[in-house]
Length: 111
Image (cartoon, rainbow, N blue to C red; front, side, top):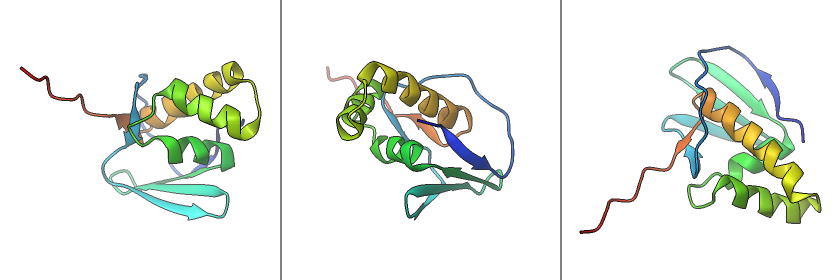
């Protein structure tokens, strides 16, 4: 699984990982056949994800954890889940660092 195809602009990177990734507010998304095009207007950056990274993006709905995303893709791709988990973590980490994914807000505690 290769991670990202291209980026039109750079930017500051944050080094963090999330448990339940979701798209960051303000990210515009366009499906381009098998690829996914992401746009952040705040930094005027376009990012094109290849098919496999696009699949990670599509599954980052806040309901699935990173390991659960890897498990689903392992079934779809008929690949080793442990290997895919590493690749999914790389994709998610990169998209978080670039500001395209964030962690799902915590559920409010019930008294």
